[in-house]
Image 1 (cartoon, rainbow, N blue to C red):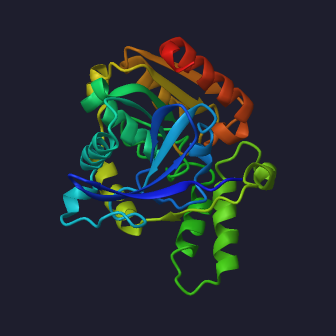
Image 2 (cartoon, rainbow, N blue to C red):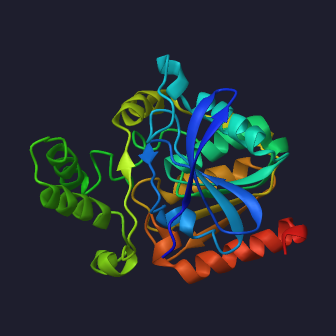
Length: 286
């Protein structure tokens, strides 16, 4: 598999590390606290056959600039940074695709800058805090696998663990978010590996407690594709249904044999749905 092209982009808001792959109309992909490298990202890879994908390390991730103030790690400030990147790249508009907390950024992007987005793809996300009131969420104490997940999370906090043990724990954690855990090796078979910005993750955990933009969903005017696995244990389906009801120009597609990773668990259908979405909303791309 071809590695992604790496660039350090000097923008009006600072220096950001981006990775580029694919041909076609520009598409921005990021995640709220992931640290990407030249091996890329499974989610972003899904779009490289149809679009020129710009995979972004946000502030405090990878070799992007650090935050001078804590507020610069917020979701809204992250969108301002993405806008500075778009402007520096010279695009009047581009598409956005986000998975999980990346999808939450996509929602904020659509609320504030729909006029700068050709389209928006939101996968396995939510427009408000998704743990407290949802027993279907694995981070809710009433979920049957809550304690298993918490045990894995706590184990991963130990700094003295050997690399192979860390990897084993991460695999077990990911399996909890798969419809068919036994397919892990088949689904995650590429040489793709990424890290996590602990600083961004810690800020997100605090911001999440007051996150609720459901009443602003009506401000999203860009064509929006919402995808969710029927069995998603991280951001349960309820929240994708809610987003679809609140966004006027949106389409919800439910993946019946997926948990939190429909772009891997039902990859063929995912690609077909996305291709159809592009043809319906952006005929000039094809």
